[in-house]
Image (cartoon, rainbow, N blue to C red; front, side, top):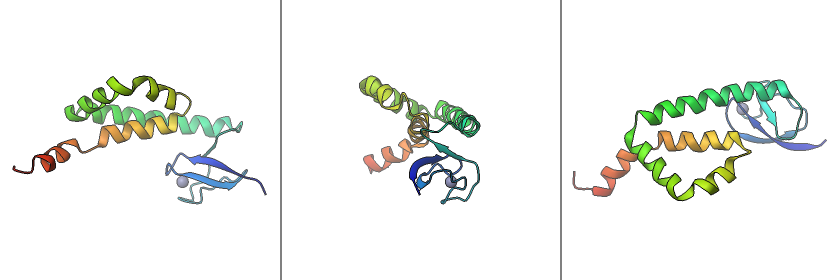
Length: 117
Ligand SMILES: [Zn+2]
C-alpha cells in the first residue's frame, strides 16, 4: 500500500496515510483530506473555502489588534520577499502562518517583558 502526505482541512493536521484514504486519522472527519498531488478537485474546493474563511477571520482578528498589525508589518518589512516565496504555493501554511500572527498575544509579551507593571 502506497502512503502519502495529505492535509486535513478539518483539524489542520498534516497526516501520512494510505493513498485514497478519506477519513482523517486524527479527527476522523471524512472528506476533508486534501492530497498534494491529487486530482480530487472537489476536496480541494472545500478545503479552499474553509481556508478562505479562516484567512478572512484572521484578517478581521488582526484588524482589531493594533499590536499584531504593527508586528506583522514589521515582520513583512524585513521578510516580505522570502515570505511570499515560501508560501506562494502553499495556501494551507500561509493561512496557518497568518492566523499565528493574528492571534499572537503581543500585549501579554510586552507586559511580561516590562515586568514592573
Ligand atoms: Zn483531521
